Length: 64
Image 1 (cartoon, helix red, strand yellow):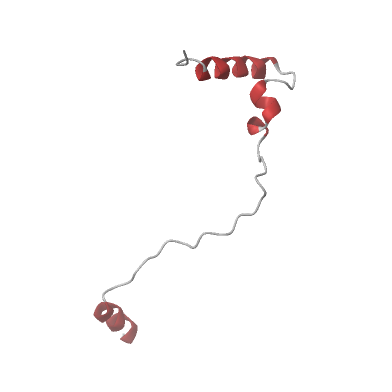
Image 2: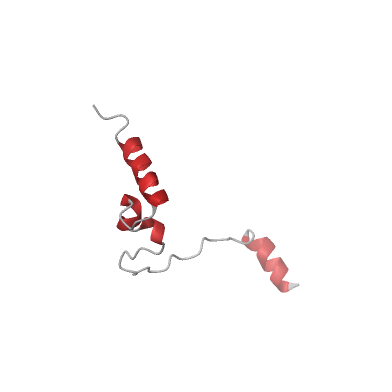
């Protein structure tokens, strides 16, 4: 009962966010879809080449 009384008298329980971990992965790419070859469609897949074409069109859409 003393614990409960301390919590009530102390103003309640304070929840803090977790501390951030030090992430030193060196900027590694974890999925194939984010690698340069896949983004540009250079690895030989027809669907990847088509997606790369659409990405390029979308990137150039509002350029004069």
